[in-house]
Image 1 (cartoon, rainbow, N blue to C red):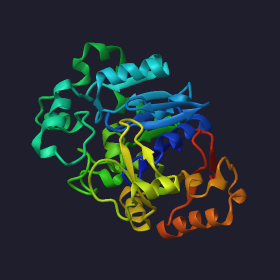
Image 2 (cartoon, one colour):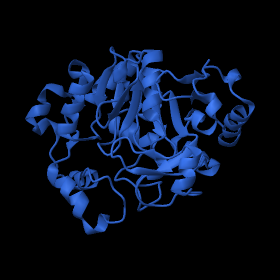
Image 3 (cartoon, one colour):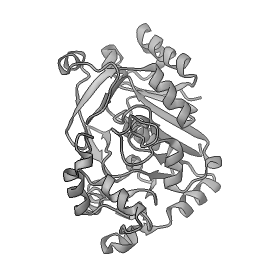
Image 4 (cartoon, rainbow, N blue to C red):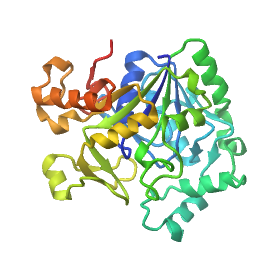
Length: 332
């Protein structure tokens, strides 16, 4: 702190929403900036209620946190307004006036474009919306009447917050292996998903970042098409308790064991200084609800230490259950 970038280390679905919501509550985060677009959902469990959020930052759980959506993001207007009502954050959320807008035509193009068939997109229209932005013909948030009450200069707000010593999270979406540049191209999203891109979309220079926290799940999953090293059959995934449905789209997630080489690559490209590990209880059920590292079984401790050894950074947060507070916090 005060400025931490949070990114995913695999193909998304690592549990970034859980980690962000925990940090928001535990550290009393002042400002959280979401980047990316509507095709990525963050799941937050709080007091038994589940939120799958495409637009509103996961830090909404802390009532004093200012929520922002950066200039590099793509706004789905209807989904944004729906989530603002759901989370009751109307008076503390802002959108950069230069964020671009996803229109209905973009979703139709996403679903029908021949060159996207077989890629496994979500169909939200993110890729076509980005194409239009690159052509300089996209509508921006400032052009949409319904968004007028929320418009702000996010880069100015967040930089002022950092300069004044406030606690800031830059919230990345998806995972590095879905990066347009570094992922399993062409089976990737329409943008870079690395920590550098998160900073760029939010308008924060790299010298203002104190920590890059990379989030890994204790096993790997991905939706859509494309390679997944070590992929298990659905039957085996169900047997191991690793079978999942995507939070935002309901699509089945394909599963594979944790891959140290991919994790190492992701940590290097993101410049990660810390790691978080989620769903340890899916690998070791007797970890569920544990709050202290010393109370973990020996095999679970060994797994965490092996990640640290191979990747070269400390695992500071460990998820042991679905709720935002089901965390082992090893930070000093």
